[in-house]
Amino acid sequence: MDTHEGLNRKISEWLARTHPIPERVRTEWASQGVALLPLGERFSAVRIASEVVHAAVQSKDQDRVATALGELLGGAIIYDRRVAGGTYYALVDGHAGAVWACDNTATCLGRGTYLGVPRIDRQRPPGTYWVVPPRYAGDLCPSRSVVGLVEAGRSRLVMEAEVCSHDDSGELKTAASARRPWAMRLVTDRLPVRPPSYATVVLDGPSQTARYTDAVGQVVEMGKHGTSRTTGTASVSGGGDGQNPQPQTQDDQTTDYESD
Image (spheres, rainbow, N blue to C red):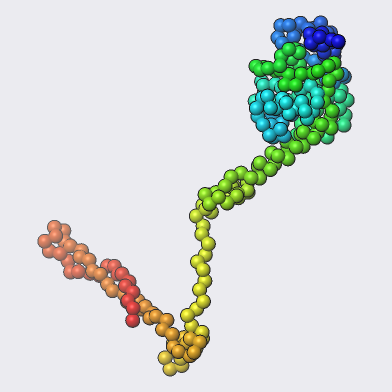
C-alpha cells in the first residue's frame, strides 16, 4: 500500500508529465509553488466564478465549500485567489471542451491554454491552492457533475436577483419594483368614491337652477354657490420729495370670492 508521501509523488509525476518538459514543472513548483501546465491532453479545466460556486453550495465558508465540492464533483479542484472575487477550476477530461455547453456561465479551457497548477501540498491560502486535492493520478471531475453545479448556482443567483428587498410595510418587492422611480413612493391611492347624496336631479324652468331630490322626493340642499366680486385697491404715486403727493390712482386689483 502506498504511503501518503508516495501517493503524492505519483500524483505530482502524473501532473508534471502533462508538460513536454516535466523537469521545468518541478523547478517551477520548487521555486514558485505553482507551475504552468498545458491543457487539452491529459485534462482540461472548467473555469467557474466564485459567486456561482458559492450560490450552488449555499456557503462562502472555505471549509464548507471544500467539503461540498468534494461531495458534488468528486474530483480535483483548484482555487485562484488572485482574480477579483476568486475563481475555481474543476479539472475534467482533456476532451471535455469539444462538447462543453455552458460557456455563457463557465468556460472550459482546453488545447492552447495553460493553467497555473499548485504543488500538491499547497492546500490552503494564500495564493493558488488545491481546494479539493487529487486523491490519485487522473482524479478528474465528471463533466456532467460540473454542469449540474453550474446550473444550480446560476439558478440560485437568478432567484436572489428577483427577490431584492422588502419595503417598510414588509411587502416583498421584486427587482423590477425596486428599480422604479423614487417619486412613485409618494403616490397614494385615489380617495374612495362615495355614493351621491341625491337620487335625481332636474332643471327648474323658472329659476333655471338644478333641483336635487332624494329617494322619497325631498329636496336635497347641495350648498350655495359662490360668486366672485372684484374689488380695487389704490396706491399713491407721490411727488419728487413726497411733500405734495399726486392724486391717488388705481393701479392694481384683487378678486375676492363671497358666498351668496
